[in-house]
Image (cartoon, rainbow, N blue to C red):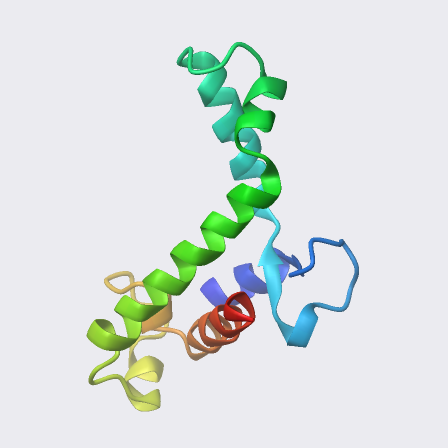
Length: 122
């Protein structure tokens, strides 16, 4: 199921809402929503006076770039720690299990993470 959610929640990495993701990899559409929620929280907790002021402090493109850098860092952890003994068979056996992270139980999600990280590093 996690792979299906990723498929539904994609837009191209260049930020445009077209149907052709860059290199077959897309950006999470929810990222704009997360950014909006963050800006609202900055107002709610008195960090800034308005959402617009928050947007000036942390523009979406900067937020997106920071997210991509965090994904690259996460991928480093996944490869050097979580995937030291991972096999396609083990991914298959874990498919749908609740006890593992999505990239540790879904081949689709694991491949997406690899492609997304590679795209972020370009």
